[in-house]
Image (cartoon, rainbow, N blue to C red; front, side):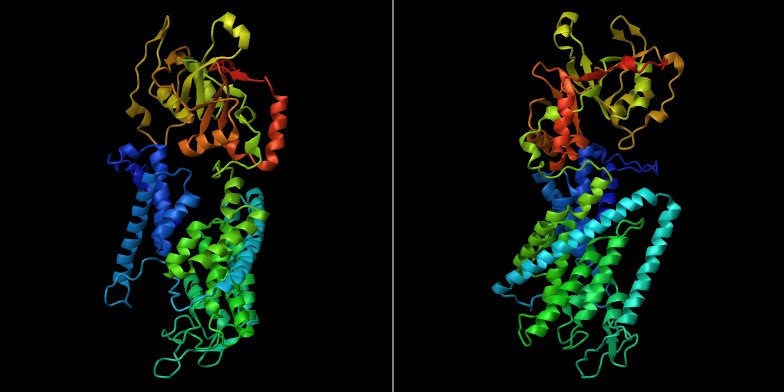
Length: 594
């Protein structure tokens, strides 16, 4: 649902379709830029969470905590409006189509409903138990992330073709079924069915959808089969709410051994499954795994303290689910609010928050969250909220920047420009100009004039915005801003260019197209300042100059994303070996004859 919401939002923000060229409304032309598209995707992700869990506020906080790189006040209320609208319309459609709700009341705000916990209190002295459960969730989450990271590295190395990915999905499907039936054969614990108000046992023909008889006798059901045969949502509800008189077991709860076997098996299967080439999620498997071992803790406490009202297993199943999910994804605020909204009980806000925070603290001691691990494995330059604690004190822009920069002049040769675009993959190029010879001998550095983007250069060449050079003037047509941005977000590539050889000696004047005032920093600027600029301004690259406004290097998002506390010595060694090695890669090096 999160991915679906983000994809739909990204498409809506464009107001057009690449696969359906005739569908071009022009209504959302003002949103066809990177900043607006990011905001739409953030709102779409929040709407997906809201629709999945019936948690509009939790969706906004999820987008803030995990789904957005940049945040501001206007984005907050826009995202909240989208999230609330998604929950409302889902509620309308589900309530209208629900055959069990003839009153047409709006009672289905989300696809996954945990049920209410209004009648299950907790005591202040239970907080240490919740802290222990959070610690356990952090340890299990760290183990889950460690195992999944190793599996992902193996998949990236050996399972690359579509045939191998298909075979992997089929193998894991077979493994899942085998494990499920193996568990049901191994654990044949049977529980009595609950009773209807009239006193007779409820049947297995639909009156009680969660009960699966399997090997059990009449009026009994298999606890393990009921967890494995039902949907994950029904199994979660079973673990949360089977200690009330109107539910399945009517006084007798799960055996703790059943829950132990189930949680171990589901933990391993979920760990193996996450990352294969199918659209699978992470939230529900972690919630179900945590609910199983949390329920097991509740059952053991019930056995140890019989007759105590506080020892209700469903409560511990809820906190186990929060601890497990928090230990894997390392979310805190959004996860707490999502569970509060999904259960409809603000009373459990403090226990859930304490459990999730300890799960995050313990898990962070061993490794990062699973989302962060996969982002790093795929080399996506997504920046954290804060720079590394140790590195920010002694790294500067001079330590981070790339010292060999591909540069352009204001007036560029078409042939050299064409071959430069084919040779390098950079997305932005500084425009420089050397001073007089007597000044050049002093520093050897070029004066910085601005930047121009790769896709702008390609579009200028594609529309033949070049011509002969007469003295210092280039006689060529000037492209409008609309022509430069008309094909966003799928700009043409250099492979789309077909420049005849006779045009190689012509020139293009880049002065009308360059950005004369991009964000720049001095080479003495600290890592904290550089990091803050990237985070707040949504930058992809940052120009580094000296005090004479001469170009000395460039910092990209990848440079910042690669900075870790344990990498700072490498950066310092590189900087020590490259002092004074600033080199401009100029257009003359991309000669057509080469």
